[in-house]
Amino acid sequence: MGVADQPVLVVGASGPTGGEVVAALARRGARVRGLSRTEEGGALALAKGASEVGIADLRDGAALTKAMEGVGSAFYFCPRADPDEASLGRFFIDTAVAAGVQRVVIISMLHSHSPIPNHEASLQVEEKLARVPIEYVVLQPAMFMQTFPSNEQIRDWGWIGRPYPTDVLLSLVDLRDLAEVAARALLDDDMANGSFELCAPGMLSIADMAAILTDELGVPVEPREITIEEWAAVRGEGFESPHRRETYTAMFEYFAKYGFKGGNGLVLRHLLGRKPTSYRDFVARGGKTAPAPSQPPSTP
Ligand SMILES: NC(=O)c1ccc[n+]([C@@H]2O[C@H](COP(=O)([O-])OP(=O)(O)OC[C@H]3O[C@@H](n4cnc5c(N)ncnc54)[C@H](OP(=O)(O)O)[C@@H]3O)[C@@H](O)[C@H]2O)c1
Image (cartoon, rainbow, N blue to C red):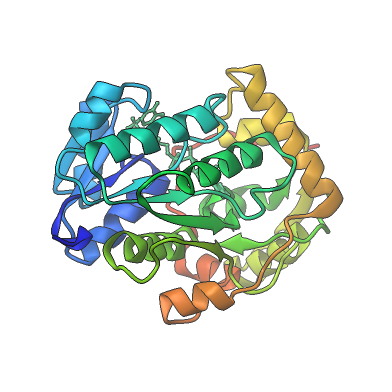
């Protein structure tokens, strides 16, 4: 039996990342088992197009094994900046091997070799996949366009900003393009045992993005360098553990020095069979779905 004939397990199916993958798989007619820690999360996964729900915490081997029953391929990413990122990834892979899952598809990072804690952890998970008897696909995406506030928030606030200079160049990707490629990796056989950098073509600075937003939203949008506290307020990031603050601080210091270099769209174009979504296309489409309202931070 091929992977496409069996249920596909999707981690984080209640959230924005797994949710887009669930929707992309559902559009392809796949039988999707959305993983969540709660029944409420399971309901969100069903609303996004999952046909069934698996309830498990990534730390609970017995529940995870049950959620993997009969699964052909599994989509995995570690929840952002988790202090146990590397061990959770290794545990998921070992559990999948033991459960007889044929293929694991993971979201790692563009430049997983960079000296940033969560990039280093992603690299360890990639490496684990090379040492176990299971098919793998490693997706190495650029910065998600959805990581920035919604069009509505940016229009209301009149600025876009991050905790690094507004002129450093960043490589971006639309989460929906990433999800479409993930669905292909989970269902088709031609990406098996490969690693793929996923970027929209070119690089943009925050200043370039502000200019595009000004054009597309029809209001002036100012580029700003903000503090990490202001960024945390916008994102609703509570820095629950010192690890989270250290991870984000290291990442922003790295971006301030080097940007997030990349932007070769050749692989993504080939895998999608169409032009990847540009940041201008993304804003014109409506940007990301507006999240729960949050207060803009005070003016820097
Ligand atoms: N943002 C970017 O620009 C970017 C770029 C490249 C790579 N990435 C990577 O993409 C991934 C996105 O992560 P995210 O946190 O932002 O995703 P997210 O889409 O916000 O997903 C979080 C989901 O993870 C689930 N979850 C959290 N803890 C869990 C646990 N212990 N067990 C089971 N499920 C758990 C939650 O589901 P329930 O609450 O329903 O259980 C929640 O819906 C990360 O690996 C990140 O490193 C991001």
